[in-house]
Image (cartoon, rainbow, N blue to C red; front, side, top):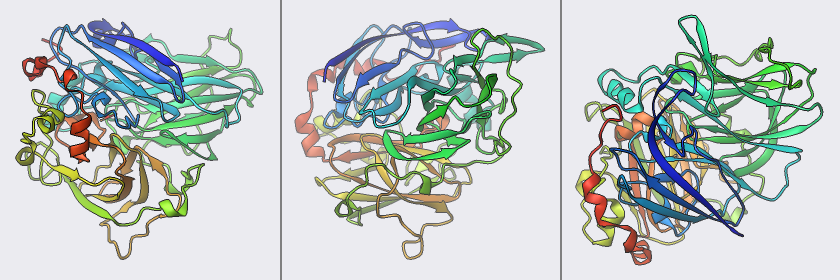
Length: 499
Ligand code: C2O
């Protein structure tokens, strides 16, 4: 592999992705930031400079395994000190997986003010398509800053967001005047296009669909799967689906739609987050196509587990069995407005990240939060996540992808709930059904401090996270203490971007 080098400069600025100008945070002046493109096996180097006025930052490369590179995971308060204004940090990691993902700030809710972008890692050309259209980010969008929305969430529950964006753009109906512009792409009849769908939203579960076209789903998160055909893909926050669409409709204009699933999202524009596919690139007309009849907005669906069969079957001997099990309950009843995972709410310790505590042998996290210590190498961890709350949560684990052994409503019961133990779906974000459970398994092959959390923006910032410390003695011995710099302590408070 070769070295792919990127320079990110994060700045406070203004932008109008949907025609309405507001304060944003941006990488190199654009929302989303530049797409990281690499080949499987390459080394990716990202130099991040914080040119913002007030806050720290850290860039997380979502879904990237960071095998033996925990300090490159970009999570202030866990894997590093926040990058202080005026400072830089260089992330170096190996593209050991291939497929589609995104990176985003992991400092407070900065990602949803614009600090995010796509990741495309080209692998072996096994899928049958002609042209790669690259990443397609599906976002929700507010006309206020994300921290203002968090304040509303703390006072009165999840805020209602104004709009959504496809690859950073959309129109908006501002008291009768339509402003902004839609994402557009051109199709040539007969061509097979690959698109890399990424849900980058703060709090919107989407259904993605293209009028009059079916799609073939070929990967889920970073895992190639046995292809299946569908006209709608349900995609939750942090999840990705790679799809192939054949340009086989009558030459015309068609809507692509990111439909907010209103039962579990907070979005004012459930059916107006749209892009345009044109068979005639000179056309400027809006499509008149209609959505597939089953593209309803009122449900809260996930892709069915039985569809997501890994293309490369895991050998029977690799089947997870119960070697080390944990059970964790998610709740929002015991700790005021905060969420709890286990018995505690996650609290950011920006001035004293977990890895620094581990390095100094001064573990203060114990009383403050739920930390799961996984001391052994090469064991299967078997984890039941259960919620009594009726809201679904997209649960994301850092440093691993995991096997989804079970998913359902009600209470998990090891004697009656069926588990898939052979070639189970594998991904890095799983939808925990409302008032339900998931059972996941992963292998302790990656020393580090890793976060597991709900990817709904407000929930992470309201404590819905736990940490796992995997093979602590080993990761401490591997640590590069030179990047645990002394500027850490000066950047331990969050300042509103509106100030
Ligand atoms: Cu997409 Cu903790 O991350």
